[in-house]
Image (cartoon, rainbow, N blue to C red; front, side):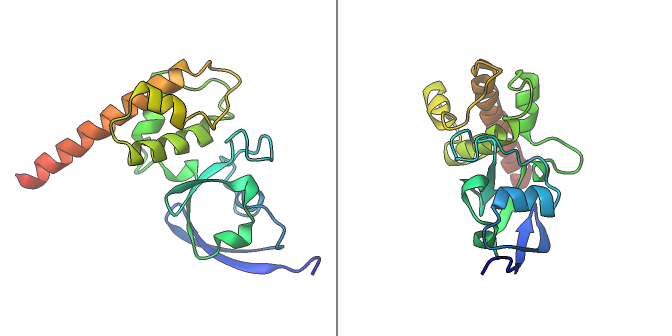
Length: 170
């Protein structure tokens, strides 16, 4: 029914949130306009560019292709949820260090896609990074800095994981 609004309970960046949306409201619009997560960028509105990528239950999804009501009772991570305790996530830091961003429009989707890629493949090759990131479009960087950032972040996360295991055994 046109104009009907549905109550939504979901978790965003580790916090339970509620809101209401029409059944036709896209998840990208709900996150940006209803909940204020403006790091969710909307580019092509067809799921092609990847700027709207968020993690839904730790899986990357194009939020412009999904209705907000489909996210009810699920957990969503946006770019705003990656930093912990005032410290950038290692992938964010690697993008900064390796100049994997310029205008920044594609960056949230790129970073979240890279987080997923590294979780699935902790020691990726350059080829697998290029393939894994190929669904995210960037008009500015030429991709070289992005690829180097993802490779560096994978190494940083691997070192961090090994360090944490060493501390646990001591």
